[in-house]
Length: 90
Image (cartoon, rainbow, N blue to C red; front, side):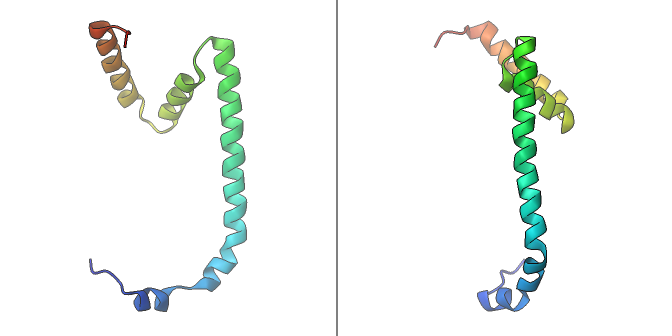
């Protein structure tokens, strides 16, 4: 794929499209940030009640949502293997 020159890129740039969409994109970005904050607080609350590390619960829930539980389980098993074999000391 050939690289476009600066002139070619500028010829196809449509700032009007950006102008029309930027407010909605800003609202979506704010919503994403708000959702991330709510998710983090929810994970923290459940993890504390469950006696789990929040980071562990977050990885687990995220893996479930992204359909990556098998990969996470394999990584956890390999990590456990290393701890079993070499211990936990630095």
